[in-house]
Image (cartoon, rainbow, N blue to C red; front, side, top):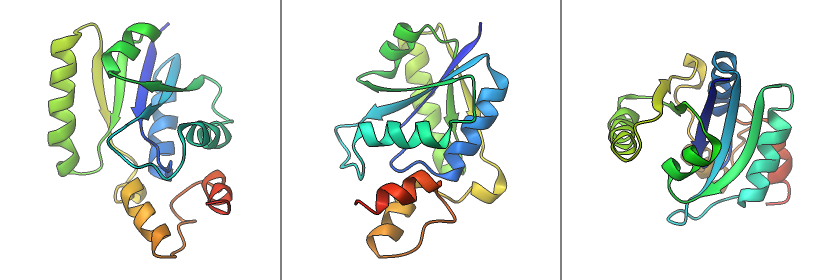
Length: 156
């Protein structure tokens, strides 16, 4: 069984993330969507809320598991015995960082491959960072995020 791991902060999850999740789930027997605890960022939502939002947003996808993890990606990879890591690329600017990360991960653990997936064109400009900025300025993000995010924003 081929298992892939899609890590990210998903703060908040966007339609771009969901597009990549659906396409990655179609490529593998199992997809683990992993919400990373990143201590260098100030999150909008707690890890538990992000997992909850992802579970609600991905309920129709049968071959996925949604978890959270802390620490090095390569340690999580070993724990879940995956063969590939999925990374989303929106633009050239994403590539440099993601390429360096993939090479570093390969140097630490060469037992998995990194696969880059681009979101569909209609989501290529959407980022969690932009979504947070729109929210903080009182704008409407309903065209960019799933209903579960909108529901959680009512309590934000």
